[in-house]
Length: 368
Ligand code: SF4
Image 1 (cartoon, protein in one colour):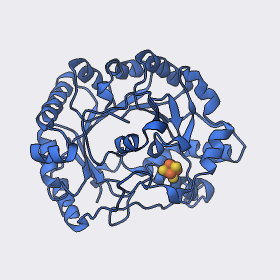
Image 2 (cartoon, helix red, strand yellow):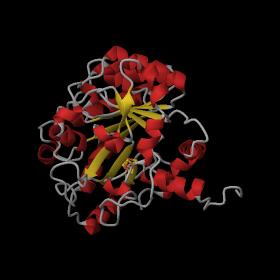
Image 3 (cartoon, rainbow, N blue to C red):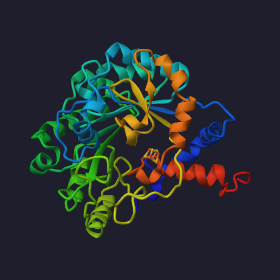
């Protein structure tokens, strides 16, 4: 069980992809040369490439360390550029802006005002943070987000130091409590989500971590397997996770649920041993457009920073996206993907849905 029946309409349920059916159809037609590609649904923006923690499993930071030259020198997007980008995304019809991390976005000095600004332009915003550096003005802006993901991965100070590489647990817990309190006082609709990856260091204490999440006032607890299997990053391996014990922990976590505290134990993108699986044969990564600190867009969120998957630059003029997105080279890049070379695919279930519903019509969609 990944979620309770009452919670089946949730953000982590990959069947949400079927709501993008018209976008799926457009992508297939575009690849066949029959239509122009629609704008992406979401822009996934990395404003800052450095981090204040040192998580040993962080894919992007591991990639940056090993590929410094390819990644280049641009660590940070200028603030005025991000505002212009938001203006452009709004006029282009992009629905969501996820302010995320090739590093820690809260370290970008100008990012704090972006959530409210983007919302004022009709864009839903989400923010992914480790929760260490939450200023008052950022906290206030986060209240306008649709959701805020807080990557904590641990349930006590000692565990945190081992997993996150710094002694910031107390600060993070205090910041999350502050956000929860602000949400309550302002009656904000934001979902605060405590995030946890399953690691050898925490797999026997998932229930304790979930209890902590509930105590400090978040609405959602989200846990999933870590991906350590990207072969282009030094040190890749198949982690040995005690799946049976983890599932026992999951069961106890679900017992903590109330209508105001939901638990999501998300494993459907992995095989039963929590290793990478591919249950699709081609990819169609056009729902999400990752835009990174170097001003380039990349093919998908799992290929961030990899020069082979760079689609083109939208810096300094965001309007360049009109030429890059849906270009012939974008199309050729998608067609050239060998999915066997990929590790975990964030869009895996969307790829499977396109194959099964648009290409093969396995749900007989003319018959509701
Ligand atoms: S199959 Fe690979 S390139 Fe395609 S969307 Fe998934 S991770 Fe990205």
